[in-house]
Image 1 (cartoon, helix red, strand yellow):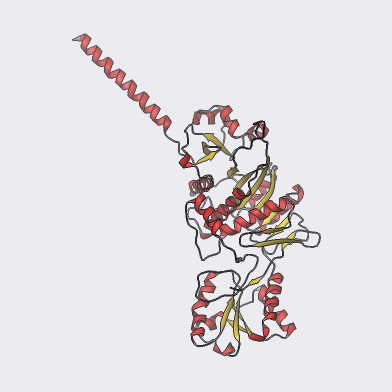
Image 2: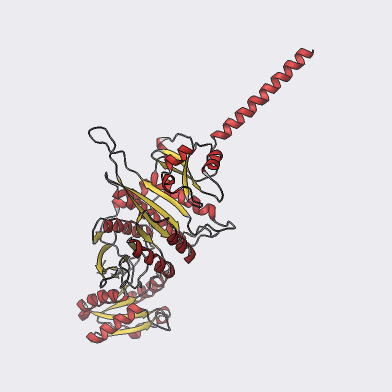
Length: 470
C-alpha cells in the first residue's frame, strides 16, 4: 500500500511538473503585448525604451541575446541606448508569406503606437520617435553573387499625430493618411542603389518637442525633413535646418518668410500667386463672364480676395461683391447678370462653405441663370460643373488607376473620398523631397505639379498655381 501510494504521488508530481513545463512553453510561444513589424522577412516587436533600463534588462525581458538586439538596431553601436527611442526586437516566430504586406504593417504599427499612448498619465517625451520605417527592396546581387551595398538616406516626417490625446481628431486622421501616402511614395522610389529610412515623429502642438529634437543629436543623420504645421515649430526647425544644411519641406504653411531661410521649401502658394493665377483666367474670359466674389467673413476679406479685387479694379473689370449670407437666404438675384455667365469666386479651404453654396447655385440654375463656381480645391462627384482655381493642390486630368491599385494592394482597402486627399498630398510631397535631394527643381506628382523657384537669395516657393476647367 505504501509503495502504491508513493508511486501514485510520484505520478501526480510528474504530471504537475509536466503541466507546469507545458504551460511555460506555451506562454513562451505567445506574443508579448507590443506592436509588431517586419524587417527583411523577420517578425519583430516595436519597443520604446523605458526610463532606467539597459540592454541587459531588455534582453532578459524579451528573452533575446544582446547581440540580436544590436543586429536589428545597428545605431546602438555608434551612440548607445537612449530613453524613448524605438528598438526592433525579434519575436522568434517565423512569418508566413501571406503575412507580408510591409506598408500596411508599418501603418498599422504606427497606429498601434499612437493608440497605446493615448490617455497615459505622462505624455511621450519631446525627443520620442514613434517609428523608423526601413523600406527594403529584394537583395541586389552582382555577378560574383556578392550583395551590393546601397546608400542609406534617412528622412524625417514630423506631423501632429496626437498620440497622447484620448480622442482622435479629424486632423490626426488626415496626418495618418498623409503618412500612408508618403510611405507609398517611398515604396515606388526604391532602387538598387538607395535604401530609405523614414523616422516618424509626433510633434503635437508642442514647441518643447521641437526644441528637444533640435538640441539633441537625434536628427544628425537626417538628410531631409517633411512636415510641421504650427508656426512656432516651423521657425525653430527652420533655424536648425539652416545650421545643418538640411532641406525642410513645408506641406501646409503658406506664409513663411523665405527671404532668410535658404533651406525651406514652401509648397502652398502665396496669396499673390493665387490672385495672379485667377486674374489671368478671368481676364481671358472677361467678355462672357460676370464675376461675383463671395465674402465668407463679415469683418474682413481673405487676403487672396483683397489681392484679386485690386487687380480687377486696376484693369477695370467689373465685379460684384456679395456676402455668403445673401446666398443662403436666396436674395442674390440682384447681383446676377442674365446675359453672362455668373462666376462665383469663393476663397475658402473649408468644404462646408462649398456645400453651403451648391444647393443655392443649383436653384439659380433652375431659374435659368448661368452660374459657375471657382473654389480653392477640386471636389469630385458634385452636381455642378465646377471650374476650379487651385492653390498648389489640384487634380490633374490623369488616371489614378495605378495609384489606387497600389493603395489597395498595400493597405487592403479602397480609397475614395470627396474631401481633400491627404494621402495624395503625402505621396506627391515625398516624391518632391526625394527629387529635391537628387537635384531636381520640378516634380510631376500624381495630383500636383511642383516647380520650385527661389525667393531672392532665400528659400524656395512652389510657383505652380493654375486654374483647371472641368
